[in-house]
Image (cartoon, rainbow, N blue to C red):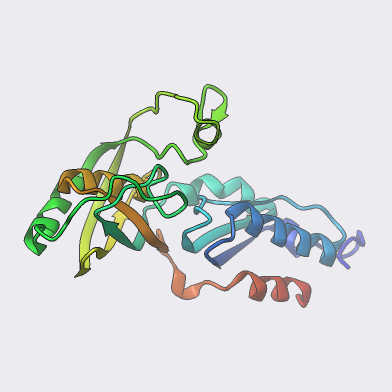
Length: 236
């Protein structure tokens, strides 16, 4: 235990963990598990936070700041991010992903590969987008998903974001694999939804993985259980 005043608590001094978040886990769940592991190890409650959330249906890189490192969360939040993902065209959902049911199903066989690749041009550089109604952004003191789940109408604010790269990696209709590099605050789900509107057939995000945050790569990350084992067995 590190709650002895003669022994410095290494976690309070500040640590950074790169987590490869599993699909289905919320970002808050990852923070909570790490906080619990540190408290169990040290006997102290120490601040833990993430530097940019990932939706539960998304996976990939999540930066976790511990102790004094939480004061630097904003630095990591402001870094550019890279994602690889997959969309399904010819359908729409209210959440812009697979959390909600398909509606407005349309044919897509007439859409060519060149049309798909050319459409990415509309989503590069400074663009405007509306966050999904199923998101945690607060409007008038409530999170958007709270309005959505109660079927309450709310005007969703438009925001300006910057997309540096948008590449199509594979086309196997109705599935399209892609890679996007963007600034903070960009909703990939919204890009996919708007992409489908441009194609006039709809599109939903079916897979998403964050692979890079600034210089930090998914290649150097660990699964949550590996990090918890490290914490439990940590010794200086």
